Length: 75
Image 1: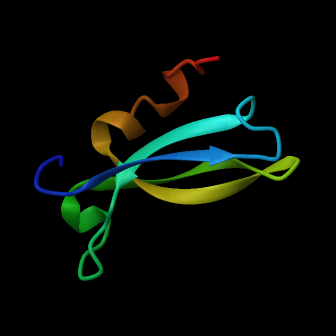
Image 2: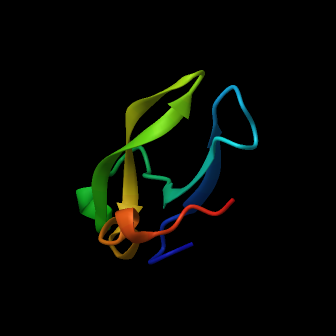
């Protein structure tokens, strides 16, 4: 929970798990709300799908969205 909103941690994996796994932490936006209304930031990121990547939108907590690109990938 963060600011009263559930936070989800998921692992997006391509056909080569665990080598191409991406950990994503994002808000679980209630059906009666929007990302903006809960204080989140909608951001499209590339997630692994099969042998490629595909953009997917997530609702991130602002602290994560502001620095998403600076987080180093962990082997």
